[in-house]
Length: 400
Image (cartoon, rainbow, N blue to C red):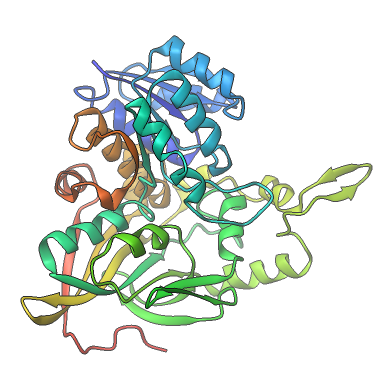
């Protein structure tokens, strides 16, 4: 008997609830909590079997502790806002339960994407005999596990990694984001960063781009960005010389984003409006389409993977380890588009590894620190099958 509390009833929370409810041999009892109870009610009406629901302001540690205790949870799956990571980790420590999230903590008033705040919890979780699993989404998450699997089975040393994230879906709106607009736009407008030869190097936002021929999608232009898995993978991959992250964007998205940036709508500093302070980006989030509403209308596919270059048995090797996911197939299964699906399924799989004891150990861990094999097997079984494409070691795959 295991009892899991899911916090967050957006697009990702919907996927997690659906997938957990379909696997009752692991997730015996489920409670879905949200600040907006009607969102949890809607999801509860869709899933297989019965789940409990609760209203929760996860910024209030005491409220979260009370819910964890009243439900008697074994694990908290946090898929709400990354601003809430530390408050929910505090609640898990106080209530004595394991913790899992899909994105690193972000301070609300700074566009900072770093694990250090959560890594600081290592001693507390270890001493309490509890586990905190960080970044169990796709990127971060599956991309970390792809690298761990490659290091364990495919390479003796990994020298270069390029994480490539392509969403080739079309939602039909002039401008929308496929996950929380506030988080998405903060991430995209931040300076780019990558790790090379032991040093971090910074670029202007979206100033560096390359073209890559994505399997089943085709040639797309991807832009160099910073993404949090670079921070942990740069520490844990043997022989690594460089690691970068790239994401594709359409011209319409980039043009709209530039206009919004130029008129100050992407700002995170408060401004005074009619006697009250508002944050422009939070206002923009309210008027943009809700990402959870995009499922029925989004067509096309995502392709996300790791282009890895290294050495195996003394010979150079280059592979692309990846997944392709179809938006409409995801919607037919769980009423969400592929961006939510590719985050929610790994959250369920990570939770499964903890609850079945495959990964459970006291402390704070990133995904690549755990055995990749059971997770990779579950990706194939639960809707995110992966493939490997071999390339010549000298092929130039990222074209200007």
